[in-house]
Image (tube, rainbow, N blue to C red; front, side):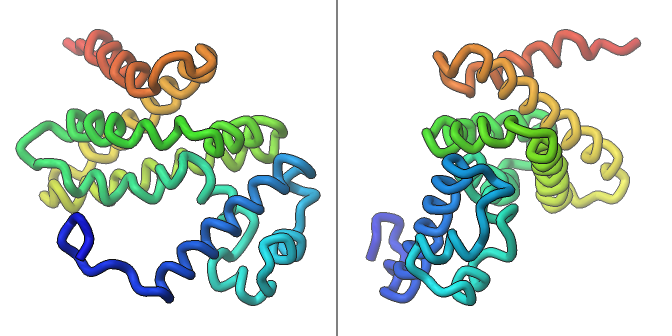
Length: 201
């Protein structure tokens, strides 16, 4: 049994996780060294010591590999984290809590390398913008599970869009500070600013 009381992963599951992590590590290294467009899936597979067919059982494209590197799985963790939030709070408060909990995922060396890579060309900047759109969809889907009432959908759509906008602003400010302080501080500051400016009559 592991610390959480669940059954420990078997050998096959461990091997799959190790292969997944190796592909991501190798892919990121090649993207940084050679450039994203110049790196091929064949090169990633060969360097990772696996067959091309094996690589495709984990990732469908280079974009998938890059996305998996960005934020150290932030996007993938966003939905599950939001579903753990209590429905006894406002959706925007739940979004803030969720983003604060996951902020440290952006603070790894790999995540910083991917962030720099994604800002290196117009095409990659467009991919980065697309990743934020995907995050908004992910957090909205999770919110609709937490607050399923149909008449709240417009509220949740707006909340998800605003929350990811706050995250983008916080990431920009954090990057400009050269990551001297935790990202969570910038997320908290951005949400506090939002509270100040949203005073509609």
